[in-house]
Length: 321
Ligand SMILES: [Zn+2]
Image (cartoon, rainbow, N blue to C red; front, side, top):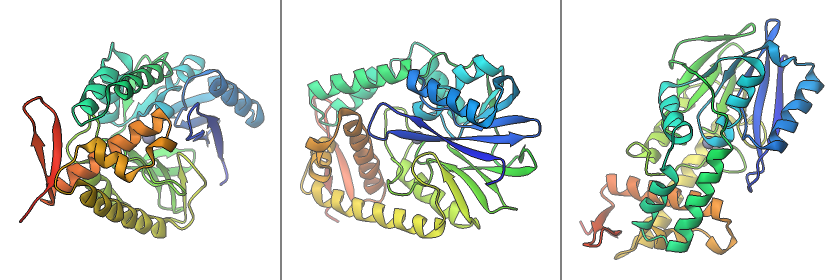
């Protein structure tokens, strides 16, 4: 697309790459998503600046779809180079401050949360270490965050984008839609080849899978010729992909409901559904959160129920109704 460059930044885990976008904005540039801050990420940004002739001082804005570390992590570094404001939804800004800026204990609370759902102790320790090390890759954090209200049009160059709330992958995720060009900057709301992670974490609001499926319904109303995602190739068969994601989650819900049977912890369901021995600890963390999101959804539908044991451990069983 004229005036839009996709930049692929490296990630030190199996996802391997996060796509970010450099967009012409008058005589300057707007950046969509920032990448994870570690030396290979910085080198990739510098190479992109050279390739496209970007003077960092001409970066006007750093816009983020959401505040996961692979999208948020280099926002502060880019701000320190450019002086540009960092803009994202108010909810994601609150999440970022709590999770990455402060002396967050999120790594420990997440491990404890997973432990209460049956995760073994050694894996809990690895989960805590992984999250703590990711947190360091979001530093330096931006000095200030600007909020983007959903629905309030954003001009980037001559294009008008409408930010649309698409919770599910993260609580307050935004996509940016340019109706005139049928173009969507979709962050991690829709991906091709892999499915966006929909996880229940210690900090997630309510029922993330219900929110994700509602976001797919909202996105289905848009006329999209091209969607530019946060991971993987551009999406040209957007509506077909939305349908595939719906089918994927329906199948996974059925598999998890079956795995719950007469009683199981979330970790037992997770090991029944995912090939855990093939996964890294990073992937295992996502598998566990994904399992919990599906169990929460099944419980809200009255298909399973949660049991709390005296020792504070949780399990699930199918409802006999
Ligand atoms: Zn994400």
